[in-house]
Length: 106
Image (spheres, rainbow, N blue to C red):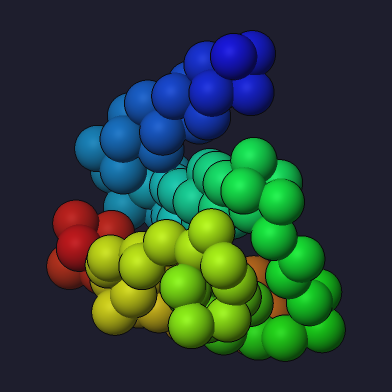
């Protein structure tokens, strides 16, 4: 339960960061991505799924936890939103591509 409470805290921090003025709001991308990734890791552990760390982020969880690949699997929703978040995070973190206000709101 502690991990779920922490994830809720990260989510709230991401929301608060996203409402800050531009430049200060950029950190929300990293916070939201961290919360989503941690939630998916906890989900995989809870289900007893083995996800491959070397697979790309989306494939690792959306395919790794899918019922066609895992007997107790789940069909996750929101893949395109998570892909947008992941692409935004990668652009920001790896190439210093600052997200615009529309991307933050999204």
